[in-house]
Image (cartoon, rainbow, N blue to C red; front, side, top):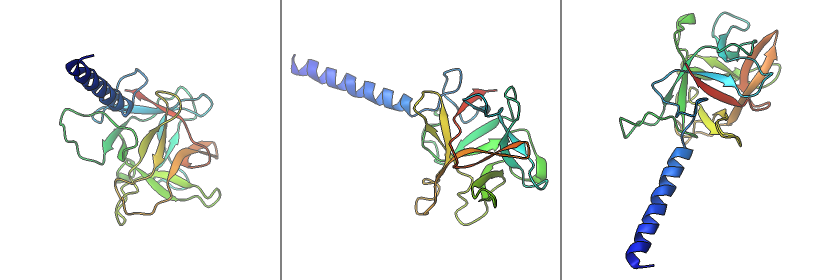
Amino acid sequence: MSTRSLTIFIIAHVLLFMITTSVAQIVIDTSGEPVEDDEEYFIRPAITGNGGGSILVTRNAPCPLHVGLGNSEGTLGVAVKFTPFAPRHDDDDDDVRLNRDLRVTFQGFTGCGQSTDWRLGEKDATSGRRLIVTGRDNGAGSHGNFFRIVQTQTGGIYNIQWCPTEACPSCKVQCGTVGVIRENGKILLALDGGALPVVFQKE
């Protein structure tokens, strides 16, 4: 093989590797298309028996609203949008990336007169698990609103984690993966206690 041919061969493989790596970092919806930050999606359990799509749930008081799942598996839930923490360097790049901090915001709902951003709440007194509620985190660093999507071992199926290492790189946080708590006929989202595999269905 000549030096020129070898150079072309190496460049082609490097480009293929870069393209493959880039595609592997993109979140995919149930249609096999990239999840985009300017579109609305339903977050649904990937495994039957876990309930329907993500919804806003009242618990012991009307506000704040908690994040939960519909009791019926046929429920699409309330659509969300994803807003990446890191600014875009390319205006045409609106694909949502794996393992990057982002906000998850329910669309078309204004209950409680507050933000419908997902937020890490306080620990549940009974289970000791941290619940997912809605509203803006106005505390130091304001990193309670930032979640991330991580790949499971199955393509197109994901977990959602709270681990805001981009939003607050100097913070010492106890990261966790979103799972469910069943309480009084309701399905609430909370960290740990068994991960909830999810898919993203475009509205």
